[in-house]
Image 1 (cartoon, rainbow, N blue to C red):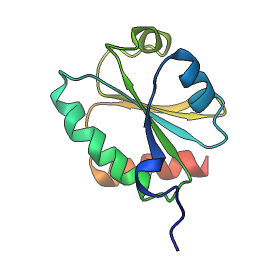
Image 2 (image 1 turned 180 degrees about the vertical axis):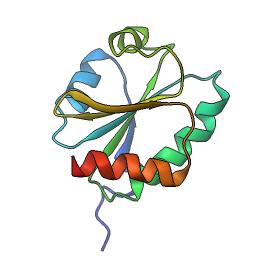
Image 3 (image 1 turned 60 degrees about the horizontal axis):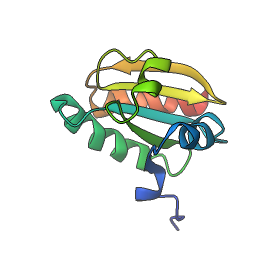
Length: 117
């Protein structure tokens, strides 16, 4: 009874600024944006954990991953000064954010708030 939106389909890597505009800013669904970097140890813990929690929301929310070294312009635009930084976006607006590692319960609460908001 699972739709195709479950699993990997709920997460994507942002390719460039126009991709971000199309798939994040203009998204009909709420989007969690994970700003990360290859050299960031905590990102390697948070990323998979957040992906797992997003997948559990059954398509109500999608996750965009932004490598800050590839997309410095987006990091600057959204005032990302440390990684991991996670933004919650709805209708193109940032409605919530956190910096650093969260456990699964905290991530679930963050996502539920975004979906319900």
